Image (cartoon, protein in one colour):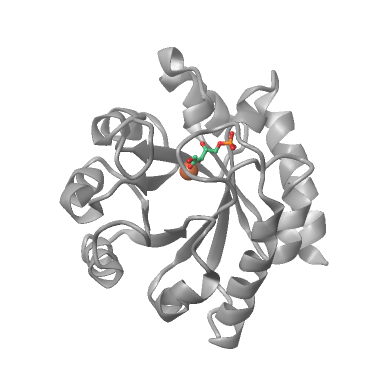
Length: 223
Ligand SMILES: O=C(CO)[C@@H](O)[C@H](O)COP(=O)(O)O
Ligand SMILES: [Fe+2]
């Protein structure tokens, strides 16, 4: 019911393969890969070659979060690299419907992400066309930031709208500041895919960390 997607942005990049494998063995449902271009966000992280290098080593869903200005331009690279879910930002320079079409045409699952200042209503017309909505719970660009609890109504509005449209299987992902204390809040609001970077990778026991996060969210989601 609840899916946990650890963000490798918070891992030790000098040991990326080992870190990712340990997280997968610890029970992650997918791996969240943060791609930042230094334009859309004021930070540069990693790109398609890193996804391509990791992909054959890890039998898990690659959940790729594109924080880039021109998703259409780089999409073929991320498709070729073996991404499974490709999430682009609604606020990017490309036409959202065109990006959705291109991701679908490549046979990948589609996510659309909204920054904190973008109201839920802006993406309502796209809900029927995507598999997942990613509600940013921090300003995109960096890990380790504080969870914005004023994003909770946005999660609720998107879940309610999706249900009203009969799209009860829409995945709602949250990303930024997700930890044991915030997981129940987002799950109660209707999020079912939790990205967690620093809160998981800073723990010694990744399996215990994932279990605790999952339990905290599941208890709240069921209510
Ligand atoms: O997309 C982003 C940041 O822009 C995230 O995926 C972060 O990597 C989450 O990090 P934490 O807030 O969990 O440390
Ligand atoms: Fe992310």
